[in-house]
Amino acid sequence: MRGSVLTRLITIAVVCLAIFLSKKLSSPYAAKPGRPITSADYTVDKALLLGYSSISKSAVEMSSKFTLLEADSEMKQFLTQSAQALSTAPSYVTMQIKQVFVKILQKVFGWSRPDARGFMGVGTLYVASEEQFNTVLKQSLKDSNNKFNLMLDIGSGTGTETMKLSSLLNVNANNVLCLESSKPLQKRLQSRGFTTDDSIPVDASFSFVSLLNVLDRTDDPHGLLESAISATEVGGTILMAAVLPFKGIVHGEFGSKRRPIKGLRINSSRAQSFELGATRFVDAIVTEHQELELVSWSRLPYLSSGDTKRTHYTLDMAVMAWRVKEKNEQKKITKEVDDRDTTTVDDTTTVTSTVTSTVTTEVNACKGKKDDKIYGFLAATMGKEGVEKWGDVLDAGAGASSMCWLLRQGDMVDKITEVTAAFDGTYGSNKLLKFTEGVEKVTIEAGNWRDESFLKGTIYDVVVADYLLGAVELHWPHGADGMMDRLVYAVKVGGYLLISGLEPYEMVLDRTNDDDRLVLDIEAIGESAAFIAGESTYREIPQSWVLRQLKRFEFRVVETKQFDMRLTVAGLMKQIDYAKSVSREIGDVSLRKAYLNRVSVLEKELKKWKGRRKGGEFWGAKNYAMVVQRMK
Image (tube, rainbow, N blue to C red):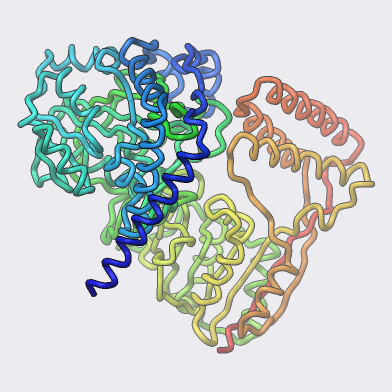
Protein backbone atom coordinates (compact mmCIF):
# COMPACT_ATOMS: atom_id res chain seq x y z
CA MET A 1 0.00 0.00 0.00
CA ARG A 2 2.81 2.40 0.96
CA GLY A 3 4.58 1.57 -2.27
CA SER A 4 1.55 2.45 -4.38
CA VAL A 5 1.07 5.77 -2.59
CA LEU A 6 4.76 6.59 -2.94
CA THR A 7 4.64 5.70 -6.64
CA ARG A 8 1.67 8.02 -7.12
CA LEU A 9 3.40 10.89 -5.35
CA ILE A 10 6.59 10.41 -7.35
CA THR A 11 4.58 10.32 -10.57
CA ILE A 12 2.82 13.54 -9.66
CA ALA A 13 6.11 15.23 -8.80
CA VAL A 14 7.70 14.13 -12.08
CA VAL A 15 4.71 15.34 -14.09
CA CYS A 16 4.75 18.71 -12.33
CA LEU A 17 8.48 19.11 -12.85
CA ALA A 18 8.25 18.15 -16.53
CA ILE A 19 5.44 20.57 -17.20
CA PHE A 20 7.15 23.28 -15.20
CA LEU A 21 10.40 22.95 -17.12
CA SER A 22 8.73 22.71 -20.53
CA LYS A 23 6.65 25.79 -19.88
CA LYS A 24 9.55 27.69 -18.41
CA LEU A 25 11.66 27.06 -21.47
CA SER A 26 8.98 27.76 -24.07
CA SER A 27 6.51 30.17 -22.49
CA PRO A 28 6.34 33.79 -23.61
CA TYR A 29 5.44 34.71 -20.01
CA ALA A 30 2.45 36.71 -21.20
CA ALA A 31 -1.30 36.17 -21.13
CA LYS A 32 -3.50 37.88 -23.68
CA PRO A 33 -5.62 40.78 -22.38
CA GLY A 34 -9.17 39.90 -21.38
CA ARG A 35 -12.15 41.55 -23.04
CA PRO A 36 -12.33 45.26 -22.15
CA ILE A 37 -15.13 46.27 -19.78
CA THR A 38 -17.29 49.05 -21.25
CA SER A 39 -20.51 50.86 -20.37
CA ALA A 40 -22.39 48.28 -22.47
CA ASP A 41 -21.64 45.71 -19.76
CA TYR A 42 -23.85 47.71 -17.37
CA THR A 43 -26.70 48.95 -19.55
CA VAL A 44 -29.96 47.41 -20.75
CA ASP A 45 -32.11 48.42 -23.70
CA LYS A 46 -35.34 49.44 -21.96
CA ALA A 47 -37.17 49.74 -25.28
CA LEU A 48 -36.23 46.16 -26.08
CA LEU A 49 -37.16 45.14 -22.56
CA LEU A 50 -40.62 46.71 -22.89
CA GLY A 51 -40.95 45.07 -26.29
CA TYR A 52 -41.01 41.73 -24.51
CA SER A 53 -44.05 42.74 -22.44
CA SER A 54 -46.32 40.77 -24.77
CA ILE A 55 -44.53 37.55 -23.84
CA SER A 56 -43.26 38.38 -20.35
CA LYS A 57 -45.34 39.34 -17.34
CA SER A 58 -42.26 40.86 -15.68
CA ALA A 59 -40.88 43.07 -18.47
CA VAL A 60 -42.67 46.30 -17.52
CA GLU A 61 -41.82 45.99 -13.83
CA MET A 62 -38.21 45.16 -14.65
CA SER A 63 -37.91 48.28 -16.80
CA SER A 64 -39.05 50.51 -13.93
CA LYS A 65 -36.89 48.81 -11.30
CA PHE A 66 -33.62 48.71 -13.21
CA THR A 67 -30.73 50.61 -11.59
CA LEU A 68 -27.80 51.61 -13.78
CA LEU A 69 -24.33 50.95 -12.38
CA GLU A 70 -20.92 51.77 -13.77
CA ALA A 71 -17.35 50.55 -13.46
CA ASP A 72 -15.72 51.79 -10.26
CA SER A 73 -12.26 51.86 -8.74
CA GLU A 74 -12.65 48.55 -6.88
CA MET A 75 -13.49 46.67 -10.07
CA LYS A 76 -10.65 48.37 -11.96
CA GLN A 77 -8.28 47.44 -9.16
CA PHE A 78 -9.36 43.79 -9.43
CA LEU A 79 -8.60 43.79 -13.17
CA THR A 80 -5.25 45.50 -12.62
CA GLN A 81 -4.20 43.01 -9.96
CA SER A 82 -5.32 40.12 -12.14
CA ALA A 83 -3.17 41.36 -15.02
CA GLN A 84 -0.18 42.13 -12.76
CA ALA A 85 -0.32 38.62 -11.32
CA LEU A 86 0.66 37.34 -14.76
CA SER A 87 3.02 40.12 -15.82
CA THR A 88 6.34 38.61 -14.71
CA ALA A 89 8.06 35.33 -15.50
CA PRO A 90 7.95 34.01 -11.89
CA SER A 91 4.24 34.84 -11.46
CA TYR A 92 3.41 33.38 -14.86
CA VAL A 93 5.23 30.11 -14.11
CA THR A 94 3.60 30.01 -10.67
CA MET A 95 0.21 30.16 -12.38
CA GLN A 96 1.24 27.29 -14.65
CA ILE A 97 2.13 25.18 -11.63
CA LYS A 98 -1.17 26.07 -9.94
CA GLN A 99 -3.08 24.96 -13.02
CA VAL A 100 -1.23 21.64 -12.99
CA PHE A 101 -2.21 21.09 -9.37
CA VAL A 102 -5.81 22.02 -10.18
CA LYS A 103 -5.85 19.14 -12.66
CA ILE A 104 -4.16 16.80 -10.17
CA LEU A 105 -6.73 17.61 -7.49
CA GLN A 106 -9.48 16.79 -9.98
CA LYS A 107 -8.10 13.75 -11.79
CA VAL A 108 -6.23 12.08 -8.93
CA PHE A 109 -8.04 13.12 -5.77
CA GLY A 110 -11.54 13.49 -7.24
CA TRP A 111 -12.16 17.16 -6.47
CA SER A 112 -14.68 19.18 -8.42
CA ARG A 113 -13.39 21.91 -10.72
CA PRO A 114 -14.68 24.85 -8.57
CA ASP A 115 -13.25 23.31 -5.39
CA ALA A 116 -9.86 22.70 -6.97
CA ARG A 117 -9.64 26.16 -8.52
CA GLY A 118 -10.83 27.86 -5.34
CA PHE A 119 -8.35 25.95 -3.19
CA MET A 120 -5.43 26.80 -5.50
CA GLY A 121 -6.49 30.42 -5.94
CA VAL A 122 -7.04 30.07 -9.67
CA GLY A 123 -9.89 32.01 -11.25
CA THR A 124 -10.85 34.25 -8.34
CA LEU A 125 -14.41 35.43 -8.92
CA TYR A 126 -15.64 39.01 -8.62
CA VAL A 127 -19.34 39.87 -8.47
CA ALA A 128 -19.54 43.53 -7.42
CA SER A 129 -17.91 46.19 -5.29
CA GLU A 130 -19.31 47.11 -1.90
CA GLU A 131 -20.54 50.39 -3.38
CA GLN A 132 -22.30 48.60 -6.24
CA PHE A 133 -23.97 46.23 -3.78
CA ASN A 134 -25.04 49.31 -1.81
CA THR A 135 -26.68 50.82 -4.91
CA VAL A 136 -28.61 47.66 -5.75
CA LEU A 137 -29.70 47.26 -2.11
CA LYS A 138 -30.50 50.95 -1.54
CA GLN A 139 -34.27 50.45 -1.33
CA SER A 140 -33.91 47.25 0.71
CA LEU A 141 -31.64 49.02 3.17
CA LYS A 142 -34.17 51.84 3.45
CA ASP A 143 -37.07 49.45 4.03
CA SER A 144 -35.16 47.68 6.81
CA ASN A 145 -33.91 50.89 8.42
CA ASN A 146 -30.39 49.61 7.75
CA LYS A 147 -30.89 46.85 10.31
CA PHE A 148 -29.96 43.34 9.24
CA ASN A 149 -29.38 41.12 12.26
CA LEU A 150 -28.54 37.73 10.79
CA MET A 151 -27.10 36.98 7.36
CA LEU A 152 -27.03 33.73 5.38
CA ASP A 153 -24.72 33.39 2.38
CA ILE A 154 -25.44 30.31 0.26
CA GLY A 155 -22.50 29.11 -1.81
CA SER A 156 -19.92 31.37 -0.19
CA GLY A 157 -16.84 30.03 -1.97
CA THR A 158 -13.73 31.80 -0.68
CA GLY A 159 -15.81 34.45 1.12
CA THR A 160 -14.62 37.58 -0.71
CA GLU A 161 -18.15 38.68 -1.63
CA THR A 162 -19.44 37.60 1.79
CA MET A 163 -17.04 40.03 3.44
CA LYS A 164 -18.23 42.92 1.28
CA LEU A 165 -21.88 42.24 2.09
CA SER A 166 -21.37 41.75 5.83
CA SER A 167 -19.41 45.01 5.92
CA LEU A 168 -22.10 46.87 3.98
CA LEU A 169 -24.91 45.50 6.14
CA ASN A 170 -22.90 46.03 9.33
CA VAL A 171 -23.40 42.41 10.33
CA ASN A 172 -20.72 40.97 12.59
CA ALA A 173 -18.94 37.89 11.21
CA ASN A 174 -20.31 35.87 14.15
CA ASN A 175 -23.83 36.54 12.83
CA VAL A 176 -23.05 35.37 9.31
CA LEU A 177 -23.70 31.75 8.36
CA CYS A 178 -21.92 30.54 5.22
CA LEU A 179 -23.28 27.52 3.39
CA GLU A 180 -20.43 25.85 1.54
CA SER A 181 -20.16 22.16 0.67
CA SER A 182 -16.39 22.19 0.06
CA LYS A 183 -14.46 21.32 3.23
CA PRO A 184 -11.27 23.17 2.17
CA LEU A 185 -13.30 26.29 1.40
CA GLN A 186 -15.15 25.94 4.72
CA LYS A 187 -11.79 26.19 6.49
CA ARG A 188 -10.93 29.32 4.55
CA LEU A 189 -14.29 30.88 5.50
CA GLN A 190 -13.75 29.97 9.15
CA SER A 191 -10.35 31.68 9.02
CA ARG A 192 -12.23 34.86 8.05
CA GLY A 193 -14.36 34.53 11.18
CA PHE A 194 -17.54 33.16 9.56
CA THR A 195 -19.61 30.25 10.81
CA THR A 196 -19.98 27.49 8.22
CA ASP A 197 -22.40 24.65 7.58
CA ASP A 198 -23.48 22.49 4.65
CA SER A 199 -27.23 22.86 5.24
CA ILE A 200 -29.68 25.50 6.45
CA PRO A 201 -30.56 25.00 10.14
CA VAL A 202 -34.14 24.02 10.89
CA ASP A 203 -36.35 26.93 11.99
CA ALA A 204 -33.65 29.45 11.04
CA SER A 205 -34.76 33.04 10.44
CA PHE A 206 -32.44 35.44 8.62
CA SER A 207 -33.07 39.05 7.69
CA PHE A 208 -30.72 38.83 4.69
CA VAL A 209 -29.92 35.89 2.40
CA SER A 210 -27.58 35.94 -0.59
CA LEU A 211 -27.31 33.47 -3.47
CA LEU A 212 -24.57 34.78 -5.72
CA ASN A 213 -24.22 32.71 -8.90
CA VAL A 214 -25.42 29.58 -7.14
CA LEU A 215 -28.76 28.74 -8.79
CA ASP A 216 -27.07 27.73 -12.04
CA ARG A 217 -24.72 25.34 -10.21
CA THR A 218 -27.21 23.28 -8.22
CA ASP A 219 -29.30 20.24 -9.07
CA ASP A 220 -32.53 21.79 -7.79
CA PRO A 221 -32.51 25.61 -8.05
CA HIS A 222 -36.21 25.98 -7.19
CA GLY A 223 -35.78 23.72 -4.17
CA LEU A 224 -32.76 25.68 -3.00
CA LEU A 225 -34.57 28.98 -3.46
CA GLU A 226 -37.60 27.64 -1.61
CA SER A 227 -35.33 26.71 1.31
CA ALA A 228 -33.81 30.19 1.21
CA ILE A 229 -37.26 31.80 1.29
CA SER A 230 -38.29 29.61 4.22
CA ALA A 231 -35.18 30.72 6.10
CA THR A 232 -35.85 34.43 5.45
CA GLU A 233 -38.12 36.44 7.70
CA VAL A 234 -41.12 38.21 6.16
CA GLY A 235 -39.91 41.57 4.89
CA GLY A 236 -36.37 40.25 4.64
CA THR A 237 -34.13 40.54 1.59
CA ILE A 238 -32.84 37.89 -0.79
CA LEU A 239 -30.00 38.98 -3.06
CA MET A 240 -29.44 36.90 -6.19
CA ALA A 241 -26.77 37.03 -8.86
CA ALA A 242 -27.06 34.96 -12.02
CA VAL A 243 -25.24 34.75 -15.33
CA LEU A 244 -27.71 35.40 -18.15
CA PRO A 245 -28.98 33.85 -20.31
CA PHE A 246 -29.39 31.26 -17.55
CA LYS A 247 -27.90 27.82 -18.12
CA GLY A 248 -27.51 25.26 -15.35
CA ILE A 249 -24.30 23.22 -15.08
CA VAL A 250 -23.51 21.05 -12.06
CA HIS A 251 -19.84 20.28 -11.34
CA GLY A 252 -19.08 16.88 -9.82
CA GLU A 253 -16.23 14.68 -8.70
CA PHE A 254 -13.08 14.26 -10.79
CA GLY A 255 -13.79 17.47 -12.70
CA SER A 256 -17.01 16.16 -14.23
CA LYS A 257 -19.95 18.35 -15.19
CA ARG A 258 -23.53 17.70 -16.23
CA ARG A 259 -26.97 19.27 -16.54
CA PRO A 260 -29.06 19.70 -13.36
CA ILE A 261 -31.46 16.96 -12.33
CA LYS A 262 -34.24 19.51 -11.85
CA GLY A 263 -34.19 22.67 -13.91
CA LEU A 264 -35.34 26.22 -13.36
CA ARG A 265 -38.25 25.82 -15.79
CA ILE A 266 -36.72 28.33 -18.10
CA ASN A 267 -35.92 28.26 -21.81
CA SER A 268 -33.15 30.76 -22.35
CA SER A 269 -30.09 28.77 -23.36
CA ARG A 270 -30.32 30.27 -26.84
CA ALA A 271 -31.82 33.65 -25.88
CA GLN A 272 -30.52 36.26 -28.30
CA SER A 273 -30.29 39.21 -25.91
CA PHE A 274 -29.45 39.89 -22.29
CA GLU A 275 -32.85 41.55 -21.89
CA LEU A 276 -34.72 38.45 -23.07
CA GLY A 277 -32.64 36.23 -20.82
CA ALA A 278 -33.37 38.53 -17.87
CA THR A 279 -37.15 38.56 -18.40
CA ARG A 280 -37.24 34.79 -18.72
CA PHE A 281 -35.23 34.37 -15.54
CA VAL A 282 -37.49 36.68 -13.54
CA ASP A 283 -40.63 35.09 -15.00
CA ALA A 284 -39.37 31.68 -13.91
CA ILE A 285 -38.71 32.94 -10.38
CA VAL A 286 -42.00 34.77 -9.80
CA THR A 287 -44.08 31.99 -11.36
CA GLU A 288 -42.73 29.42 -8.93
CA HIS A 289 -42.20 31.71 -5.91
CA GLN A 290 -45.04 34.20 -5.71
CA GLU A 291 -43.98 35.24 -2.22
CA LEU A 292 -41.05 37.12 -3.76
CA GLU A 293 -41.22 40.72 -4.97
CA LEU A 294 -38.50 42.25 -7.14
CA VAL A 295 -37.18 45.44 -5.51
CA SER A 296 -34.24 46.43 -7.69
CA TRP A 297 -31.86 44.93 -10.21
CA SER A 298 -28.76 45.82 -12.21
CA ARG A 299 -26.55 44.46 -14.94
CA LEU A 300 -22.87 43.85 -14.26
CA PRO A 301 -19.97 41.91 -15.74
CA TYR A 302 -19.19 38.72 -13.80
CA LEU A 303 -15.40 38.67 -13.61
CA SER A 304 -12.85 35.94 -13.08
CA SER A 305 -9.15 36.52 -12.58
CA GLY A 306 -6.94 35.25 -15.35
CA ASP A 307 -4.76 32.27 -16.16
CA THR A 308 -1.97 31.60 -18.62
CA LYS A 309 -4.28 32.35 -21.55
CA ARG A 310 -6.13 35.54 -20.53
CA THR A 311 -5.65 38.21 -17.90
CA HIS A 312 -9.33 37.96 -16.99
CA TYR A 313 -12.64 36.51 -18.16
CA THR A 314 -16.12 38.04 -18.12
CA LEU A 315 -19.77 36.98 -18.50
CA ASP A 316 -23.05 38.94 -18.50
CA MET A 317 -24.71 38.91 -15.10
CA ALA A 318 -27.73 40.34 -13.30
CA VAL A 319 -27.81 41.15 -9.58
CA MET A 320 -31.32 41.31 -8.14
CA ALA A 321 -32.68 42.32 -4.76
CA TRP A 322 -35.95 40.63 -3.73
CA ARG A 323 -38.25 41.12 -0.77
CA VAL A 324 -40.05 38.23 0.92
CA LYS A 325 -43.57 39.62 1.11
CA GLU A 326 -45.29 36.52 2.46
CA LYS A 327 -44.74 32.89 3.33
CA ASN A 328 -46.49 29.87 1.88
CA GLU A 329 -46.12 27.19 4.51
CA GLN A 330 -47.52 24.50 2.26
CA LYS A 331 -47.53 24.91 -1.50
CA LYS A 332 -50.03 22.81 -3.43
CA ILE A 333 -50.90 22.74 -7.07
CA THR A 334 -54.50 21.75 -6.16
CA LYS A 335 -56.64 20.40 -3.40
CA GLU A 336 -55.12 16.97 -3.53
CA VAL A 337 -55.49 13.78 -1.54
CA ASP A 338 -52.03 12.48 -2.48
CA ASP A 339 -49.25 15.01 -3.13
CA ARG A 340 -46.02 13.24 -4.02
CA ASP A 341 -43.98 16.32 -4.92
CA THR A 342 -44.52 19.77 -6.40
CA THR A 343 -41.42 20.74 -8.27
CA THR A 344 -40.92 21.98 -11.79
CA VAL A 345 -40.90 20.23 -15.09
CA ASP A 346 -38.94 21.42 -18.12
CA ASP A 347 -36.28 20.62 -20.71
CA THR A 348 -33.76 19.63 -18.06
CA THR A 349 -35.86 18.19 -15.33
CA THR A 350 -38.17 15.93 -13.73
CA VAL A 351 -40.50 15.20 -10.90
CA THR A 352 -44.04 14.43 -10.29
CA SER A 353 -47.15 15.68 -8.63
CA THR A 354 -49.98 13.26 -8.18
CA VAL A 355 -53.51 14.39 -7.46
CA THR A 356 -56.50 12.11 -7.06
CA SER A 357 -60.12 13.25 -6.74
CA THR A 358 -62.70 11.64 -4.49
CA VAL A 359 -66.20 12.33 -5.87
CA THR A 360 -67.65 11.12 -9.18
CA THR A 361 -69.27 13.82 -11.31
CA GLU A 362 -69.56 14.57 -15.00
CA VAL A 363 -66.63 16.42 -16.52
CA ASN A 364 -67.99 19.74 -17.78
CA ALA A 365 -65.04 20.26 -20.12
CA CYS A 366 -66.08 17.16 -22.08
CA LYS A 367 -69.66 18.22 -22.72
CA GLY A 368 -70.39 18.51 -26.42
CA LYS A 369 -67.14 16.87 -27.49
CA LYS A 370 -67.42 14.00 -29.96
CA ASP A 371 -64.99 11.35 -31.09
CA ASP A 372 -63.14 12.15 -34.31
CA LYS A 373 -62.25 9.57 -36.96
CA ILE A 374 -58.97 8.66 -35.30
CA TYR A 375 -60.52 7.98 -31.90
CA GLY A 376 -63.28 6.05 -33.64
CA PHE A 377 -60.70 3.93 -35.46
CA LEU A 378 -58.77 3.17 -32.26
CA ALA A 379 -61.90 2.18 -30.33
CA ALA A 380 -63.24 0.09 -33.22
CA THR A 381 -59.93 -1.74 -33.59
CA MET A 382 -59.89 -2.56 -29.88
CA GLY A 383 -63.43 -3.87 -30.31
CA LYS A 384 -62.37 -6.10 -33.21
CA GLU A 385 -59.66 -7.48 -30.95
CA GLY A 386 -62.37 -8.51 -28.50
CA VAL A 387 -61.09 -6.22 -25.75
CA GLU A 388 -64.12 -5.65 -23.51
CA LYS A 389 -62.25 -4.13 -20.55
CA TRP A 390 -59.45 -1.64 -21.07
CA GLY A 391 -58.59 -1.74 -17.37
CA ASP A 392 -55.84 0.58 -16.17
CA VAL A 393 -55.10 3.16 -18.90
CA LEU A 394 -52.16 5.56 -19.22
CA ASP A 395 -52.66 8.69 -21.33
CA ALA A 396 -48.93 9.36 -21.72
CA GLY A 397 -49.34 12.83 -23.25
CA ALA A 398 -52.45 14.33 -21.70
CA GLY A 399 -54.82 16.61 -23.52
CA ALA A 400 -58.48 17.47 -23.06
CA SER A 401 -59.47 15.56 -26.22
CA SER A 402 -57.79 12.26 -25.36
CA MET A 403 -58.90 12.49 -21.74
CA CYS A 404 -62.52 13.09 -22.71
CA TRP A 405 -62.38 10.23 -25.21
CA LEU A 406 -61.14 7.86 -22.51
CA LEU A 407 -63.81 9.04 -20.09
CA ARG A 408 -66.46 8.34 -22.73
CA GLN A 409 -65.42 4.68 -22.72
CA GLY A 410 -67.31 4.45 -19.43
CA ASP A 411 -67.00 1.25 -17.42
CA MET A 412 -64.60 -0.25 -19.95
CA VAL A 413 -61.90 1.86 -18.29
CA ASP A 414 -61.20 1.30 -14.60
CA LYS A 415 -58.58 3.98 -14.06
CA ILE A 416 -57.04 6.76 -16.15
CA THR A 417 -53.60 8.22 -15.46
CA GLU A 418 -53.06 11.51 -17.31
CA VAL A 419 -49.44 12.66 -17.76
CA THR A 420 -48.53 16.26 -18.55
CA ALA A 421 -45.13 17.93 -18.71
CA ALA A 422 -46.29 21.27 -17.31
CA PHE A 423 -48.24 22.73 -14.41
CA ASP A 424 -49.73 25.65 -16.33
CA GLY A 425 -51.06 26.18 -19.83
CA THR A 426 -53.82 24.58 -21.88
CA TYR A 427 -52.78 21.03 -21.01
CA GLY A 428 -51.03 21.73 -17.71
CA SER A 429 -51.87 19.84 -14.56
CA ASN A 430 -53.70 22.82 -13.06
CA LYS A 431 -56.12 23.00 -16.00
CA LEU A 432 -56.59 19.22 -16.15
CA LEU A 433 -57.29 19.11 -12.44
CA LYS A 434 -60.07 21.65 -12.90
CA PHE A 435 -61.45 19.58 -15.76
CA THR A 436 -61.53 16.40 -13.66
CA GLU A 437 -62.46 17.80 -10.26
CA GLY A 438 -64.53 15.16 -8.50
CA VAL A 439 -63.78 12.32 -10.94
CA GLU A 440 -62.51 9.32 -8.98
CA LYS A 441 -60.94 7.34 -11.77
CA VAL A 442 -58.63 10.13 -13.03
CA THR A 443 -55.14 10.79 -11.66
CA ILE A 444 -52.99 13.65 -12.93
CA GLU A 445 -49.21 13.18 -13.07
CA ALA A 446 -46.98 16.18 -13.88
CA GLY A 447 -43.52 15.07 -14.91
CA ASN A 448 -40.98 14.61 -17.66
CA TRP A 449 -40.52 11.23 -19.32
CA ARG A 450 -36.81 11.89 -19.74
CA ASP A 451 -36.47 11.37 -15.99
CA GLU A 452 -35.89 7.63 -15.60
CA SER A 453 -37.42 7.68 -12.12
CA PHE A 454 -40.70 9.19 -13.37
CA LEU A 455 -43.40 6.46 -13.09
CA LYS A 456 -40.59 3.91 -13.03
CA GLY A 457 -41.86 0.33 -12.86
CA THR A 458 -45.53 1.21 -13.40
CA ILE A 459 -47.30 -0.76 -16.14
CA TYR A 460 -50.74 -0.45 -17.68
CA ASP A 461 -53.26 -2.51 -19.65
CA VAL A 462 -53.52 0.19 -22.31
CA VAL A 463 -51.14 3.06 -23.09
CA VAL A 464 -52.30 5.97 -25.27
CA ALA A 465 -49.77 8.21 -27.07
CA ASP A 466 -52.01 10.78 -28.76
CA TYR A 467 -49.78 13.07 -30.86
CA LEU A 468 -47.18 12.65 -28.11
CA LEU A 469 -44.08 11.76 -30.11
CA GLY A 470 -44.19 15.03 -32.04
CA ALA A 471 -44.67 17.06 -28.86
CA VAL A 472 -41.93 15.39 -26.82
CA GLU A 473 -39.34 17.70 -28.41
CA LEU A 474 -40.73 20.57 -26.30
CA HIS A 475 -39.60 18.93 -23.07
CA TRP A 476 -37.08 16.30 -24.18
CA PRO A 477 -34.86 17.46 -27.07
CA HIS A 478 -34.17 14.61 -29.52
CA GLY A 479 -35.98 12.30 -27.12
CA ALA A 480 -38.40 10.50 -29.47
CA ASP A 481 -36.49 7.21 -29.38
CA GLY A 482 -36.19 7.41 -25.59
CA MET A 483 -39.91 8.17 -25.41
CA MET A 484 -40.65 5.03 -27.43
CA ASP A 485 -38.66 2.98 -24.91
CA ARG A 486 -40.68 4.45 -22.03
CA LEU A 487 -43.97 3.77 -23.83
CA VAL A 488 -43.38 0.15 -24.77
CA TYR A 489 -42.12 -0.82 -21.31
CA ALA A 490 -45.17 0.81 -19.71
CA VAL A 491 -47.45 -1.73 -21.46
CA LYS A 492 -48.26 -5.01 -19.74
CA VAL A 493 -47.57 -8.22 -21.64
CA GLY A 494 -50.74 -8.76 -23.65
CA GLY A 495 -51.66 -5.08 -23.33
CA TYR A 496 -52.08 -2.51 -26.08
CA LEU A 497 -50.32 0.65 -27.22
CA LEU A 498 -52.45 3.16 -29.15
CA ILE A 499 -50.48 5.74 -31.14
CA SER A 500 -51.59 8.70 -33.25
CA GLY A 501 -49.53 11.34 -34.96
CA LEU A 502 -49.08 13.80 -37.80
CA GLU A 503 -47.03 12.92 -40.85
CA PRO A 504 -44.39 15.65 -41.31
CA TYR A 505 -45.61 18.04 -43.99
CA GLU A 506 -42.42 17.66 -46.01
CA MET A 507 -43.11 13.92 -46.40
CA VAL A 508 -46.59 14.30 -47.89
CA LEU A 509 -46.56 17.72 -49.58
CA ASP A 510 -44.93 18.69 -52.87
CA ARG A 511 -43.02 21.99 -52.84
CA THR A 512 -43.47 22.35 -56.62
CA ASN A 513 -47.21 22.76 -55.98
CA ASP A 514 -48.09 26.36 -54.98
CA ASP A 515 -50.57 25.34 -52.29
CA ASP A 516 -48.20 22.80 -50.76
CA ARG A 517 -45.31 25.27 -50.92
CA LEU A 518 -47.28 27.91 -49.00
CA VAL A 519 -48.11 25.47 -46.20
CA LEU A 520 -44.47 24.35 -46.01
CA ASP A 521 -43.20 27.94 -45.95
CA ILE A 522 -45.57 28.95 -43.15
CA GLU A 523 -44.44 26.01 -41.05
CA ALA A 524 -40.76 26.61 -41.81
CA ILE A 525 -40.71 30.33 -40.95
CA GLY A 526 -42.25 29.70 -37.54
CA GLU A 527 -39.95 26.82 -36.67
CA SER A 528 -36.78 28.58 -37.78
CA ALA A 529 -37.71 31.79 -35.94
CA ALA A 530 -38.42 29.77 -32.80
CA PHE A 531 -35.03 28.09 -33.03
CA ILE A 532 -33.20 31.41 -33.40
CA ALA A 533 -35.20 32.89 -30.50
CA GLY A 534 -34.30 29.95 -28.28
CA GLU A 535 -37.78 28.42 -28.19
CA SER A 536 -38.47 24.69 -28.29
CA THR A 537 -40.71 23.46 -31.11
CA TYR A 538 -42.61 20.37 -32.16
CA ARG A 539 -40.85 17.79 -34.32
CA GLU A 540 -43.44 15.56 -35.97
CA ILE A 541 -42.49 11.88 -36.21
CA PRO A 542 -43.56 9.88 -39.31
CA GLN A 543 -45.51 6.65 -39.09
CA SER A 544 -42.72 4.73 -40.84
CA TRP A 545 -40.28 5.71 -38.07
CA VAL A 546 -42.68 4.48 -35.37
CA LEU A 547 -43.13 1.13 -37.11
CA ARG A 548 -39.36 0.70 -37.43
CA GLN A 549 -38.96 1.41 -33.73
CA LEU A 550 -41.60 -1.17 -32.82
CA LYS A 551 -39.63 -3.84 -34.67
CA ARG A 552 -37.05 -3.58 -31.88
CA PHE A 553 -39.61 -4.94 -29.44
CA GLU A 554 -41.96 -7.91 -29.26
CA PHE A 555 -45.04 -6.03 -30.49
CA ARG A 556 -47.70 -7.20 -32.91
CA VAL A 557 -49.05 -4.53 -35.24
CA VAL A 558 -52.81 -5.00 -35.09
CA GLU A 559 -53.81 -2.30 -37.56
CA THR A 560 -52.59 1.03 -38.93
CA LYS A 561 -54.39 3.69 -40.93
CA GLN A 562 -53.77 7.13 -42.40
CA PHE A 563 -56.36 9.91 -42.42
CA ASP A 564 -56.66 12.98 -44.62
CA MET A 565 -56.12 16.12 -42.57
CA ARG A 566 -58.07 19.29 -43.28
CA LEU A 567 -56.02 22.47 -43.12
CA THR A 568 -57.97 25.72 -43.00
CA VAL A 569 -57.02 29.35 -43.45
CA ALA A 570 -57.95 29.89 -39.80
CA GLY A 571 -55.58 27.13 -38.72
CA LEU A 572 -52.76 28.37 -40.93
CA MET A 573 -53.35 31.91 -39.67
CA LYS A 574 -52.66 30.63 -36.15
CA GLN A 575 -49.31 29.39 -37.44
CA ILE A 576 -48.72 32.87 -38.89
CA ASP A 577 -49.52 34.41 -35.49
CA TYR A 578 -47.11 31.99 -33.85
CA ALA A 579 -44.40 32.91 -36.35
CA LYS A 580 -44.95 36.60 -35.57
CA SER A 581 -44.73 35.94 -31.85
CA VAL A 582 -41.45 34.03 -31.93
CA SER A 583 -39.95 36.37 -34.54
CA ARG A 584 -40.43 39.27 -32.12
CA GLU A 585 -38.22 37.42 -29.63
CA ILE A 586 -35.22 37.39 -31.95
CA GLY A 587 -32.60 39.61 -30.34
CA ASP A 588 -30.79 40.77 -33.47
CA VAL A 589 -32.74 43.77 -34.76
CA SER A 590 -31.99 43.33 -38.46
CA LEU A 591 -32.72 39.62 -38.35
CA ARG A 592 -35.94 40.22 -36.40
CA LYS A 593 -37.12 42.72 -39.02
CA ALA A 594 -36.25 40.32 -41.84
CA TYR A 595 -38.27 37.53 -40.25
CA LEU A 596 -41.27 39.76 -39.56
CA ASN A 597 -41.18 41.02 -43.15
CA ARG A 598 -41.16 37.45 -44.45
CA VAL A 599 -44.07 36.52 -42.18
CA SER A 600 -45.99 39.54 -43.50
CA VAL A 601 -45.43 38.38 -47.09
CA LEU A 602 -46.71 34.89 -46.26
CA GLU A 603 -49.72 36.35 -44.45
CA LYS A 604 -50.71 38.34 -47.54
CA GLU A 605 -50.24 35.27 -49.71
CA LEU A 606 -52.41 33.23 -47.36
CA LYS A 607 -55.25 35.76 -47.65
CA LYS A 608 -55.06 35.52 -51.44
CA TRP A 609 -54.99 31.73 -51.13
CA LYS A 610 -58.28 31.87 -49.22
CA GLY A 611 -59.87 33.81 -52.05
CA ARG A 612 -59.04 31.24 -54.69
CA ARG A 613 -60.05 28.16 -52.68
CA LYS A 614 -63.68 27.64 -51.74
CA GLY A 615 -64.06 27.51 -47.99
CA GLY A 616 -60.34 28.09 -47.53
CA GLU A 617 -59.65 24.38 -47.04
CA PHE A 618 -56.74 22.16 -47.98
CA TRP A 619 -56.63 18.37 -47.70
CA GLY A 620 -53.01 17.51 -48.55
CA ALA A 621 -51.75 16.73 -45.04
CA LYS A 622 -52.04 13.34 -43.32
CA ASN A 623 -52.62 12.01 -39.81
CA TYR A 624 -52.03 8.40 -38.80
CA ALA A 625 -53.09 6.00 -36.05
CA MET A 626 -52.14 2.48 -35.04
CA VAL A 627 -52.96 -0.20 -32.50
CA VAL A 628 -50.16 -2.57 -31.45
CA GLN A 629 -50.01 -5.32 -28.82
CA ARG A 630 -47.15 -6.35 -26.57
CA MET A 631 -46.51 -10.07 -26.97
CA LYS A 632 -43.59 -10.66 -24.59
